[in-house]
Every structure is written in C-alpha cells, then in structure tokens.
Amino acid sequence: MFEKFKEWFATTGSPKRPCLDFTRRVVMISGHQYIVRMADDTDIDTMVTIEERIYGKAPWSYAAFRIELQRPHDRLYLVIEDDQQVVGFIGTAVDWYHYDLHITNVGITPSYQGKGIGTYLISTTKNYARHLKLHSMSLEVRVHNFSARKLYESLGFKDHHIKRRYYLDNHEDAVDMQANLLK
Image 1 (cartoon, rainbow, N blue to C red):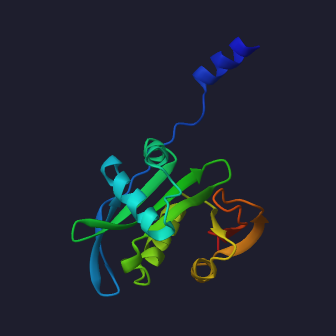
Image 2 (cartoon, one colour):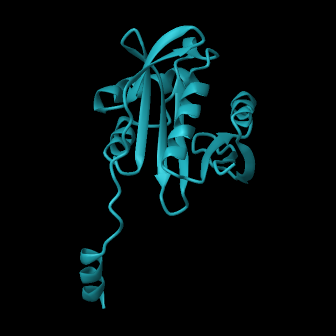
C-alpha cells in the first residue's frame, strides 16, 4: 500500500505553489520615508536583536528564523528599514488548506513604536493575503497585552478563543484573533 501511495504522490503530489514574493518599495509612514522588502538571512541577527529589545530575551532564536526563511512557498517575512537600518519586521505563514495567513511575529524597535510601522506592516500583509485569495488572517497575542490587542482590533481582528498556557516563558494564555478577508 505504501508503494502505491508513494507512486501516486510522485505523479500527483501536493499542488506546486509559487514562491511568495514581495517587491521592495519605498513608503511614507507618518511623514517619514522607509523601505519595505523581503527579509533574508542577513537580517536574522537584527530581528533577534529587535526581539531582545522588546522582550528582554528573544522568543525566537536565530535557527528558528533561519528555518522560516527557508520556506519560500508558505512563509513571507518583511523588514522595514530607516536609513539602511532594519527597525521592524513581520513574519507570516500561509495555511493553504484553510486559506489563512497567520502572523507568526511582529517586532518594532522600541524607539520606533507608536509611529504607525506595525499598523503599516499588518495592513500590507493583509493586502497581500487578499492578493493570494486567502479568506482570513490569524494571530496569537498575550491575553494581557492590551495595547497590541487594541491595535489588532482596530485592524479588523476579533477575539476567536483563548489558548491556555500558550507562552512557554511564563505560561500566559494567548488570545487567538482572526480577521475575515472576504468582507
């Protein structure tokens, strides 16, 4: 039976998906010019450093980011630069089966927070998800991170359910939030 399955999968296989792609662009956010582009391996150290500045200890390791960037058919990571310095990033994962774009992480250097950069990155990936004809976006956020939850709600995300003891560092619950893209 296994041999028949291997033969079937070799001839039909899973659908071939194109690599996710994003064209580098210059954008204006709150009157300031930034460059948004796809992340690559040279950005990993900076993404880890941004997480360290935000959380004290980076939740994602160099290796975790590297693995994500090696999945071009279902992962899209964008960075945003100010004067050739990466100041923020967003990571997404496409769930082709459920037609969902999941935000895996968002990080903005603390001195750049509150300037609309996170909102821009989320809105950009939301438009990208629509371009891919996906039906929804999803993310998890710490239950006590009220400022992030408020931001996500302003961008159309709604509480879906609680994931108990989701975060490994302190076992805090997460709120699973979803945005419908079919509206």
